[in-house]
Length: 80
Image (cartoon, rainbow, N blue to C red):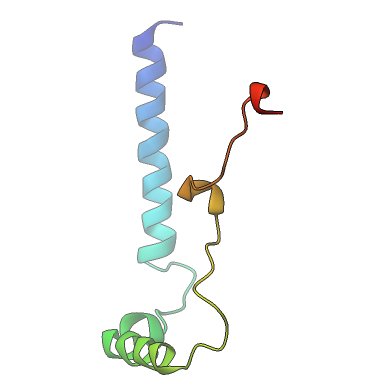
């Protein structure tokens, strides 16, 4: 297949998927509305204040993905 055919079909599929996403999510053809807790910025700020005000009962914050921090020790085969 030539690159022109592949790129044009890729662009076409991206356009079609964006149209479906926009019609279903933003225009809400199946009904529904955006919840107040998502649309209200004040709600987010008050919730964040509440969570920050809670006393910490455990140790320091936990890193959910320690591999992304790159703080692990890698032993080479000569260090056995």
